[in-house]
Image (tube, rainbow, N blue to C red; front, side):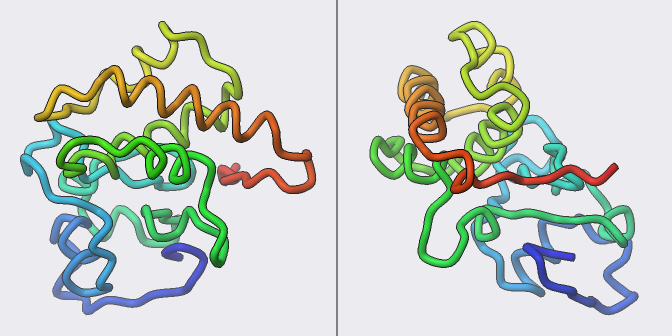
Length: 162
């Protein structure tokens, strides 16, 4: 399942990095290609609720699992609170933004009001070529505020499979 929809890809792509299948085969260009060696985090996606580097994940490893990409966070026209926060205060070039958004979603699923230190620790695995780390931290705080202001029934939750 990719963003809630059943998808199939040719068997020949089973050993390809998932980033290329998402981008080139499924047309989900929100997943970025950065370094290709799993260092930068631009290609982060959620795989069964956990952030993974899609450039280092073979497509066959995602079979039968729930994949959420940047495009799958929004519910219809309603942005996920993390997406909303990053759009209110965008980064300079935005190349790394997808990876930071996916990390922030995972963090805020387990900790709705993280401390600055917890934010820095959770976001530490992603690089920003432009040095927008203060903006990134502010965006996670803003997303936390948006989530806290929503009625419980309206909160968007990315469920992890058991």
